[in-house]
Image 1 (tube, helix red, strand yellow):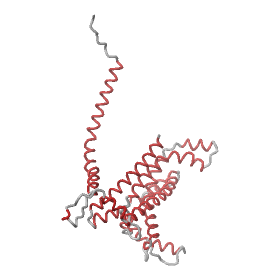
Image 2 (cartoon, helix red, strand yellow):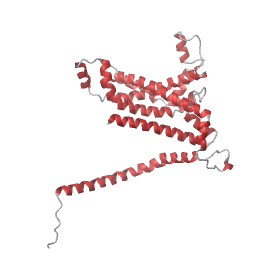
Image 3 (tube, helix red, strand yellow):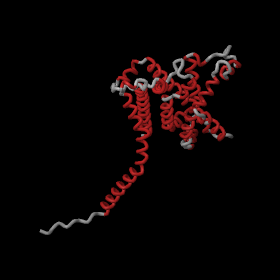
Image 4 (tube, one colour):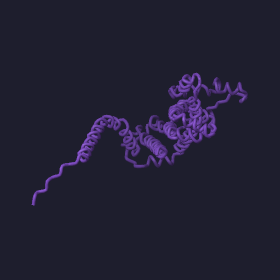
Length: 311
């Protein structure tokens, strides 16, 4: 019997083999180029997170070095749920996050709709509206603290001149006044960021859609509901993701304006108090890990919503 003669590989097989080899080479090159960035990410991001989690499992109080910093497992986490002050700070943080993100969305959307219109001086308006966002948060917080001052604050002066109050008030001396002041200050500073992101989404909408809707007899409200909202939904979700995460981690605004007084202590500020003032690295790290887990959960929820919307 004659030996089997190997059949020559078809041109399609050769092409597939070359494509596979090229893909493997591109994948290898991609990993090689990302390797330095991954190392830096591990050093400045992953390691601190793991280190913080490790500290949260120990009773580490620097004022008591003789204790040896024993391993206590999840004791620090269980202490959080028994700590009334921690519960109050968590409640305030959620309340602050919901209020500020809601008002920032409303104000930011309205500002984006205005900036998306064609009018004289539009470029100047767009530049001016971003000024509050460009101001450092610490500077902004100090400015608003002066505005709310009970003796010479501008807020009292304006309300008094308008006849809305009969005398100057100490707005930062009550729980409701403090919360209102913090929300207004945060919305003033960060609503422009929301407006900027939403404006980018609005500019991606083709003008032909509005012209077709107008020909079909749709009014402005119908065009807004049927065209604008669906087309910018992904952009709005991305803006909400950034602002929700940032609002939940609020620290500098609260620290400078109120110092956590009158029920305005955020989780980040409470964690800072234990870490830097009480030098209780175990409990403070547990609070920090809690913040990380909540932020991570918020990110997953938003990312899942964004993915569904894009699909």
